[in-house]
Length: 324
Image 1 (cartoon, one colour):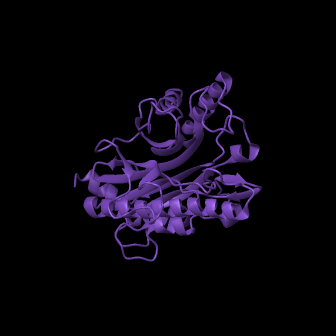
Image 2 (image 1 turned 90 degrees about the vertical axis):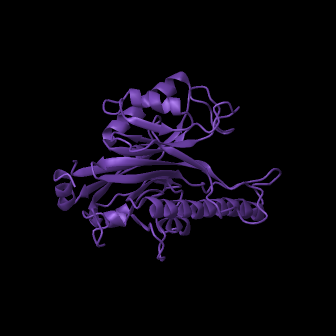
Image 3 (image 1 turned 45 degrees about the vertical axis):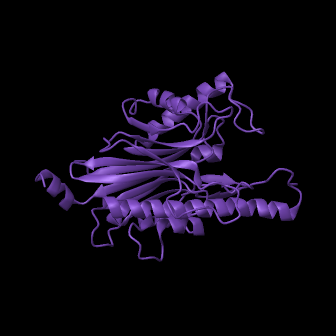
């Protein structure tokens, strides 16, 4: 059994085929830009060297498979990903999971909110995640399966409606509020989904993703289940890590308007919190690969990647070795 398991989250930033128009204000990738982006993405995946990687902003699962084919260490990895609507006139983003460890069951997609969760009354939007959630049961050892969930919550980008003037402060505020409400509702839906999963499966959980907000934001803490007695509470891996050197801490995943912040997180269940009695492992450290964000490399993502290294306790390795 492995002593250390590595989980990572990777927002690939508009990973799409060459020539595809994604947004009105964004030019499609040229053939040369596409090749450069694939090469950079493949190198970065190898640099992560993680056992399980959650991806966001995948506009084509086929393009992600092409990037994996260019890696040295992930060509035979299991890829779980679903294109939202391959026949649509314009591609839309999705998430994906790639694992070098075996899956105990096939990966599944959760597009709709769980029962009982809906957008607020009066909203014209349907009760679905803006980017469907992916879940896979990863066999990290002969006697341990971890439920890994990959997410990408609604962004802070203002949700303008037809005819809205972006110069009007009231309409701007309402557009931002719509995005906030959407992200908050998705957080509630995700919390309900994770709680149900924990109650049914009674397994450790790891959530990888772009939460589009900081770790102590209301939406993120809803997902973690902070301040509640509900089953399946989660913890920010960055806060749990054993090796914390605050003088050298450079943990950020994005740079916006000259400010550095982290909206890409790895959340872990109580089984990886050594302060709790039923812990089976601990977060050794959390590493951020973010130099490319500062350098603004043309082919790179605009997000840093986050890696959490988790060490399983010796007692658990002993159980595995004994065949228990």
